[in-house]
Image 1 (cartoon, rainbow, N blue to C red):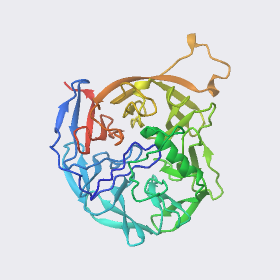
Image 2: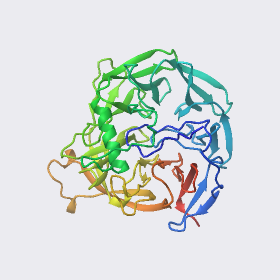
Image 3: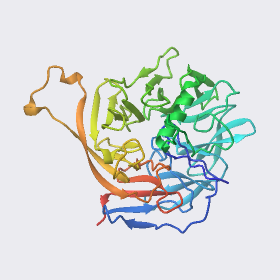
Image 4: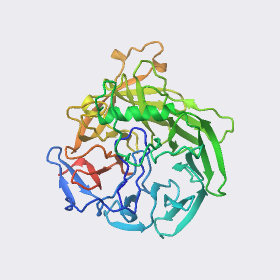
Length: 438
């Protein structure tokens, strides 16, 4: 069976790892532990089986107590004890890993039974499996803070076929990793630019979609938003059970991507998080801070030229922009549990930043720019708070193929970054220690 870990550098697909899938070919076991000679940081391999994967960067894979990480393996799901790094099988079933709950010690996954989609949860300690919800079409992308609501999307015309990443199905030869397209001159486009063509095709199709929630206590399904915009990347707030973030998918320089919606108000209208102020400005790969107070995202003004990690404070609307150098631009950024640090998973030279030396994992220290001599502009409290990011290289990713996104995330104690990589051939889950090795 083929490996569909789906982290193939797609700026538009919610990349959730499928499990119960064998690796394409046997490979020599990568090292269990080493100190990166270029950075001085210790790296450890958490997974045993080739084809294992951690979750997409903004999905929670940790228990509420922060003691265990859940990963997908070719046989199912396993837990990693973060203190001992002991790996224990959790469930073996043909499905897709979704996320770990923020309230209970449950790992959620989805399977297909005939024509029915079934969401299941496995207790991380007892390994007992329960059915959470059943529905006929669509997919689940998120769960709320108290685990009472699942959130998902569906194309409302069953006759329109889409692939797991939301793109239109064209023919059986079209593989998930192949977005090949030609430019106006008839010459093949790069991987990154070809994706833009396919994104635009999907966007311009104006396919009717719904966002829905399912009550995990009653099984009731409720539509919360309809549109012919391409709806994707649903994320419930980690702290507010009724605040949902989603995106308008498509070429980032064309769509208004970032939106918030309250699911407890029947007539609530989506609130746009970011408004473009220049042509070719893009914003995306958004995520909530751990305390749920801020939405952070990748901002470029314009695309491929000037790079920021931008923040939107939900309660006040205040904004902060931290400048990022070209080489440190990352496919995904993330923030630490205490909100004091960022991290980035880098990118290769073909991606949007065209970084000449971007294949690294980065620890990022944000630094605000103060007013000179303490003299404030009259309206400074209403202006964007500027800053810069000082970076530290953690892992040399020169051997990594960035069609698999590393998807860095901080461990709950803030001492390690977990990521997935094919740097040694097969896909594995790794962690790098933020403190330098002694």
